[in-house]
Length: 264
Image (tube, rainbow, N blue to C red; front, side, top):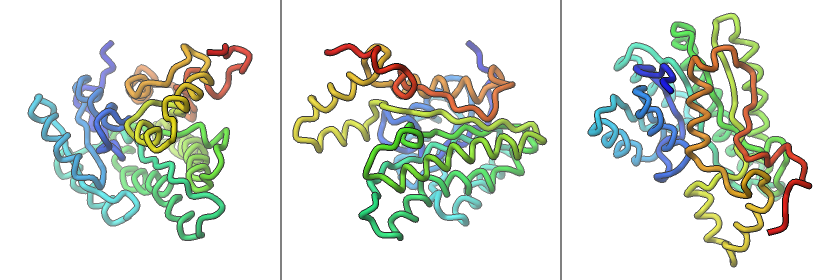
């Protein structure tokens, strides 16, 4: 399906994770659709990813940016506008389940909010004038932790709850400009970070089997590609009358009856 994203300038934060991460997968899917991916990340991997995209014929840009720093975000947006003259879409994809719980310091809690929530605000704040010009849209990548809790991660849970609130707030605030705002909610997705976490456990294979058992649809983890494909559909004009929505790409993890789950 042609999603009509060819030539669209799409800014994706948190897009220089390890190969196979959600952000990198989104960037690659955008390139396949003929969009212009702009990678916003503090990690130098982003430069290599952008070089690979350009070598394969994609117009791409990497802006090394600490997305918790207002001046750096503003400078990155200025750089994008200088190069392309417009911004059509923003995908806020930053997320670190950092384990900042009730035993953490207040400063650690606030820093968690800055990364996982404040960065979303900063990017939209500085991109907004350009989204108004393009009548673009915003997509926030959220987490089921905002709705289910997890335990031991107060900072991340609070931030992801805030992401969902901002998604709806922006949908209301920006409707007058024809700007849509939506969120994808991820539950259990097999990313490189997830694999790294499993390797820290005494029996990662057993933990993975237990997690899969709780996912009703096909008893498996969500693939990053499935999240990326849904993201592209939502930001495209194929979803032109969808705003203020939370789209769950989770195999039924959050909502479906536990009775559906069979013993392994």
